Length: 319
View 1: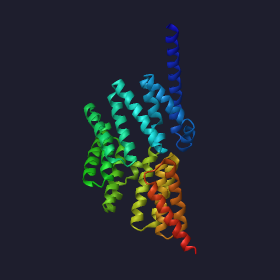
View 2: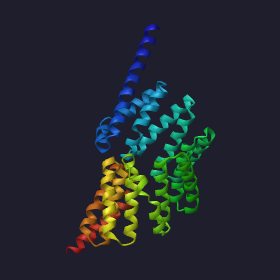
View 3: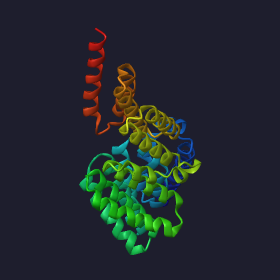
View 4: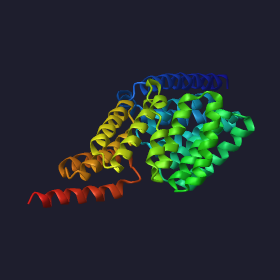
């Protein structure tokens, strides 16, 4: 009996050491962006297996630490199914610990993943559960994040009035708390809302690059640059549109944002199509589809069809 107990304790220690090693590795490599993600791709399967083992061994803190460390990497690389499994394991561990704040964060992450996959109703379900805990704990920062995420879902559904209501609640929280990065994110989202309604002047006002174009928030900078590029394209200023979309593409590549990279390639391709440069349009739309294939993007089917149409048009024009 004593030998079995000792063996079990030794095994637990091994798991703890492995979890600490992979947590540190994931944090280090994620901070490097695209280059680090390439390194983590080689360790992804091992990390997922280790999480399962730690959960089965009731090593709740190890599950939490490793899950948080690889979350951004899995999201940026488009490994949504795996990220969903990781967050669900983290949620299980948080509930076992009675860690309500971490539980809320996990629910929020599940909502975010569903939103990225276009599963809007599921996303809202997770976000509402997260918001309830945020308010119970009087966690204003967490509440603001969840309000912003709920607003984004309503915006994607075309419910601009409800989206603006939630954005404004979040903006108030960010400003009261002095959260400049959060404020920049909300301002950009409100700008996007006005853009979708055709109010381009107001949209540009909200795309406040002074807040989002910072070394600490290059992902936010990529979003801002992309949004401004879209406005200039809509206004038929294609030179400016290409300038901003290409800056967005470079920024998103730097941080390893595969989904954003695909979006920027797509927008550059459409802009070239607008100016009848079909060869360049095909080049960038093809790049977008290639990235989407790697991450199982929800728009892949439609975008493949669009690429086929552009290729057919180019071949026809060359005859």
